[in-house]
Each structure stands twice: as C-alpha cells, then as structure tokens.
Length: 469
Image 1: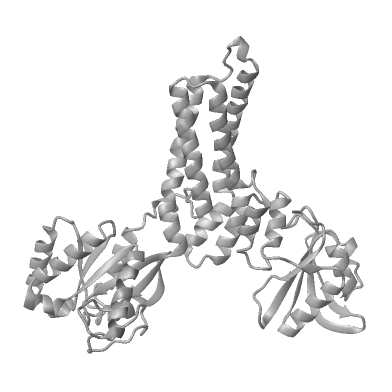
Image 2: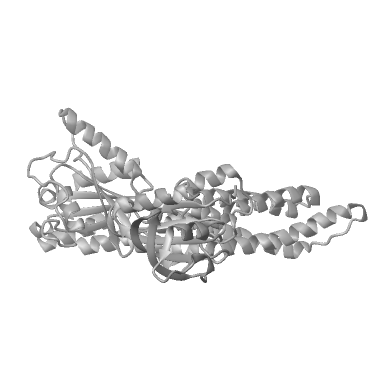
C-alpha cells in the first residue's frame, strides 16, 4: 500500500481563521515546497536542516499568494517517516485553496482520509493501535477520554500486548522445534513454565477485556435517561444539571413530547442526559409517540433516573412509587436505577427521614436522593452518585483501558485460543495440535498491533480519520 508520491492536505479545520496549516509528505515534498517558496533570505529549502522554520512567500510564477512560515521535517525523523513540510499561511479559505491547487499542479496529489497516519504506520513510526489512538485523541472531548487516548498513543496498550506475544512466540518456537524431533520424543518447552505463562496471559487478557466496559462508556459518554410521570420536573432537572435553560419548562402536563439530549462533563467523565416524555396513559397521538421513544431511550441508557414529585408523595404515599420501581426493575433488571424525589423544599424533614427509611428496606437496595431541581438543591449529590457508577480507579492508577471495539474482539478471540492451549496442556494434547491454537492466538495479538494485517482492514480503519491526519 505504501506509495512514494507526495500528498497534500489541509491539516487544520476548513474555513476561515487566523492561520491554516497545509501539510505535504512524500519523497519529493521538500523539493516541491522549494519550487513554490521564496525565502526572505534567499534560502534553498532542500539544503536546510530538519526541524527548522523559514519565513518567506508562496509564489505562483510572478504572483505572490501569501507570506508564510515553512516547517521542514526530513525523513525518517518526521511524523510520517517521510520528507514532510508544513506551510503555515493566513487562514483565508481563498489562500488555502490557492496554495493547495498550486501544490497539486507541482506534482502533489490530495491525501486520502488518514493517509498521513497510515504512512506513519507503514513506515514503522506507529503500530496500528497507536495509530487508532491518534483518531481517538482528536475526537476526545473530556479529560478521561483524552487520558486514555494519550496512554494508548504512547504505546501503553501496545507494549503490554507485544510483551505477551513475544513470550508466547518463544514457547511456540520451542513447540515447533519439538515437532522437528518428533521421532526422538523430546520436549524442549518446559510444560510447567508454559502453564505459568498461559495463566499470566489469561489473567492479563481478562483484565483488558473487563476494562472495555469502562473504556467504552468513557469514550462514547454515559447515557442517562431521566424518566417519570408528566410534570414532575424532568426538564427542570435537566436544566439544573446543565446550568442552562435547555428544555422548556411548563406547568402543563405533557410539555416534553420528544426526547431532549445534552452532554455534561463531570470530573472528566462525559454524561449524555436524555430528558424523556412523561410516562402516562394518553389519547394524544403525538405524546404517545414521545412516550414510545422514552422506552427506547431507557433501553439505550446506562443509568436510569426515576424522578418523583415530592408533593404528590405526601398525598399518595410510597405505594405508587413502588409500583413504578417494580415495573422498571422487572423490565430493566441490570440497569442502575436512582430514585430522585423532587421538590425537597416542600417536604418536612421528618417525612424525608421516614421515606428514606421505608425505601431503604426495599429488596432492590435502591439509591434514593431528595432534591429541588428548581432551587438547585441536591444537584451536586446527584452528580457524585452518577460518578460512583463509573470505575475510574483504573484511570487514576494509569492502567491500560480498552476502548476500541476491534481490539476488544481480538482480545476475546485470543483468550479463546489461550483457553484451548491450556486445555490441551492439561489433557496431554500432542504438540502439533497445540501449535495450531498457539498460532491462532499469536494471529489475534498481531491483529491488534498491526503485525498481522491486510489492505481491507487498514482501509476501514483509516477511512474514519480526517483528511489532514
């Protein structure tokens, strides 16, 4: 897949701005840049040292397009491993396009999506999991996802997998050697050490696989559904959490007829709150559609907040709430459910204590919070409760967390093959049959880091990158 032609793309977001950066990479990148650049000190870019900056103008024949700074990075000491220049020009869309068109006429071609990072991978500057982390880093929008992407891009995940693969490969070589001396019936691979290695690999694989549950929600945000009867304050709660008037608030029941979503970062973790239509029996066709969507959103949510009107609680008691709780727990038994009693300010303190005591005896061991969405009381406590559902200990300890579905799939398959090898070792399976399972495990390890790959896989991965990366 590796081409030696020179590629060009805008490396900064499209549109007008203060400056824009145009990146060129390839064997002739510096020569092409030199052909359109006129240094204010008459420098020849081809003779300049790597990692240097040069001030001058981009010139199209006798027409000056812009005053620019040109950065030179000579291969292999560049991001792509090839000769690379970056032209920092003024951010006019017209100037950007004029310079890019000039470079195309001088022998460049437009880069494909992710082609700069693809070349970095093909030239050995990054392994495949590190290259994928580049895309995650660009798209990270909170502290936690940024931290995970940085850890992976630095090679934390790759190093862990590479070490396991190398140790397994050493034993695989000894097993293969035994096959060459099958008639002599000798063992080169110490079975006790091999079993210890398999146990260690199995332990690490299970830890990485388990981390995906945390990593996936951190990367994509944790969806939280706010549900309850009409007019209990769901929209007011959403506004209080976001600290802005995001949803319409009205005394009229059924105001929210569709789901409203917005995101909030709490201590580095992204949460996606979904304000749903109030659940009730209704003849209103539009409202009925909204209620149907409510149940769809609950299906998608990681956490459910059941909001209850505190004033209504004083009138009707706990019986109606317990019915709602039972329905939700029966329908969604695995989802964390938080009972939030709204309008705390209208409930006497002795009644709050009584309700807490009665709800605490519930077999479900539910979390119950008393808040006032309108007065912003108890909102911080609710945020802390949401954080408690996320295991951030691994983040604090800088452990490897898996966020990529492709990596997760390969780890599952590798674990399955390691389990087969362990079973073969315990039952005295012949070396030639064990060797097959070991090769399969090595294959799945290699799929993660890119030691085993194909053009279709690379095409799918890098197609999701932005053009200039």
